[in-house]
Length: 268
Image 1: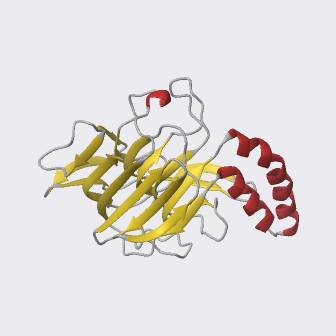
Image 2: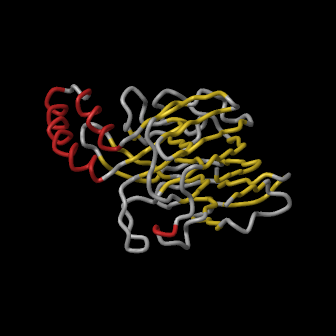
């Protein structure tokens, strides 16, 4: 299966359109605009297109090998500092790519996290899954959590979290957390408010990412189960740290948007 949607003059019939809490989808000048005028921490706000909302996880559509390209830009850029300013940085989470909606029983099929995508998150998000990479920012990311990883790394992670809390040294816990999650990441150092082409290649035992034809990440493992595609903008945050902190929530923001010029997915 191949998909090429340049949003001219309307959506490809493949997509499910989802808006919640004031999220808005519209096509302007042959580009899809996902936006909201404001968001409140009490209410979930989301604008997205996907191809999994109506499916059981066993019926998700995408497997390797495939190649995805998305040309996009954002209303706000990303600050590398852990700032809580709402004026100069995109809030919540956003991005595009493939994942499996983990920790849900969609179709009576529980799954651990697997994803291969371009992911943005802003503080208070702090998903510190990869050593040496901040837990927030604009990233290329692969997450490949397996039950083998869970069984073999859960006890060492629990012990190292206890050590981190007592000593303040998080390095051991960070290493075990990365082993358990199977996460590999790279920060994307571009101006998010400008048009860029984001490309990933998902193969059976590897993955590669490019921005404007410049390779930014290459990994030697990749998700193994079928995944669904999503492109979204919302006001959520998540905290997962080597000190054992795990929580989720929503954040407030003013107007912000994500524009997508085209989405191209080719089964190789």
